[in-house]
Length: 184
Image 1 (cartoon, helix red, strand yellow):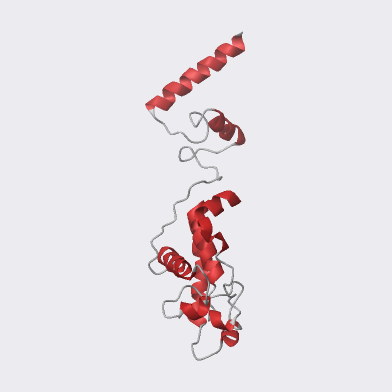
Image 2 (cartoon, helix red, strand yellow):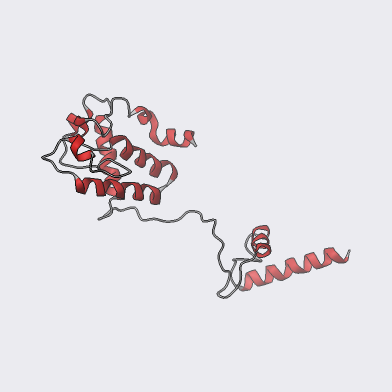
């Protein structure tokens, strides 16, 4: 999995060198590495729901931020997942100093904000996989044998598949096949 992440990140994989932690005064509480990490998780693995939840906690921290207070005082009010989200009013020349990836870091933080912010983030959660069993038809009980049958038959028999003419025909053929096998 590291290979997938590094392919998504490219030569940018070492971006974190020289990036301040959100505890440092010059960071102004911005969780730079955390935001770019979320960008990488979405790009490499499609972990949109996870990233949105993490970003939402940074939005809550950002709401607590008081510009007139110093960084450490502000951070003292933060909760479990500390750090602020991307903030356009922050001077990232100060935050990132002479980091060779400064422009790309700012671009990716802005892109992450555009994707994940709870107000108008553009990435919607589309679940890729689920390991939860489902009812094949309303009222059917999902049982271990029906789930096994569903997996062995590619969804034609057992939990799932749906009542279509094609599935009924194939299910009938499969039952006939297995009944003939027992006779022999």
